[in-house]
Image (tube, rainbow, N blue to C red; front, side, top):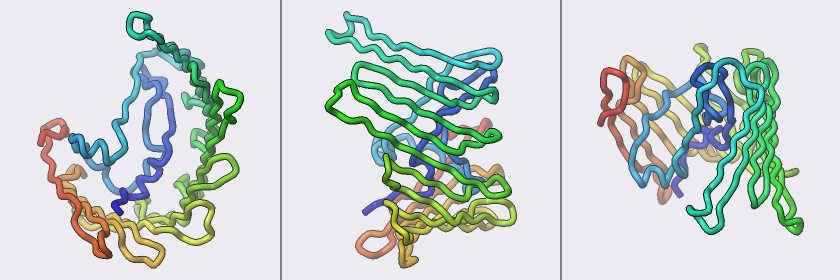
Length: 262
């Protein structure tokens, strides 16, 4: 079974954040924790890649000057567009650092409220409550918690639904340069490891691997980077029929502005 690397992890959930600069993003969709480790892979623009990675990510943008405490956005479809036009409302509230502390989405199907708790600018917890308009259907709650070490580096990550814990990352390790070296993953509240992530660095390459509970490699990604720390060669392998086999191999070329051109 093909698996994408479980560490891009914290791609399991996303934090909606807000910058108060003139060109702000509402919300700026980004990974919850940009761990100081392997370079981010360039995009591979193909239909199959989009399917495998779970869909395209997008962000709404708007220009504001100065800090913003609250933003309300209405999306309304006119009757000539649809016989049953929709109307959605999004309300976002921000703290004095520009962090989004609450987001409320409402439409004809129900509503959801996301509440973020920050401490000195770092996200500590996120709770998302979902409610439907049908009283017969009960709502549900998803939650996420982050813990950091004395160097403000991610040390533990937990996520679940209602009272059930579904994902738990722990035992984070970093090298002397502060780069991510690995962690342990436990699933569905289990007390034993489901998998391990390991990262090794050499002069111009990075090896990122996922190992099963017996420390047998089930996934491997090898990046070759140039002098600007851009990925120029990417090999991804996963385990099929008990053997680690090459899944795909991609090379990249960039223009003078660092954009992928081939």
